[in-house]
Image (cartoon, rainbow, N blue to C red):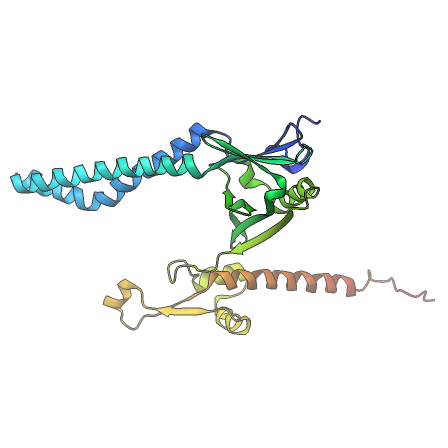
Length: 291
């Protein structure tokens, strides 16, 4: 058997007995450290706007009551840090999948799922289907995961922090899984989930940004948006609400605006190709012989 899988999956697939191992989490220690660090930062960030003013007042006034409130808030923050850290570690250890081994050449064919502290083995016949889900936002990948569906449970396998699998082409991964699981008659699907619920108006696009993306003057944005079905939203910014009540800003739905940008790009490319095909030859040369 080969010591390394060739092609785009070389970093995430390695050979094992009677099959291959698909790696999701390269380092347990790094994954735990990242989860622990993120969970420990949340309570201080949330509590800081309340704790810091109380500390300032306590330092200025020297009030025992205010100092008491400060110490209580600080203690609650510490408790929240501990609870979130413990919860994060428990979730990571119990739910996150480190790797999955597909053993289609074994007798019987098996699938091994390894979590952080334990692993489980099941017959490949119990695996009903596998789904590769790729989440996109404005044409950019946000995440990818592999979902194993059995008769009794659903196992979600997601790449760890900076894992090579997060950069693997979704179609290449789907094709490889289809090849490995074809002997066991396991269906493999690929699904794409596109983010469309952008926060309005904060994540919606201004006319200038939309015009830049479309490659048109700002004055053309409204007309194209109306023609192409791009949803708009008009609102008055907070600052303008106080000083210029009549000021209104229009923003555009990024999801549909991005699709229109792709449509315009394709139309322009087709028009350029048509123009180059229809363009006459160099001066003095004609398609027919002239005397």
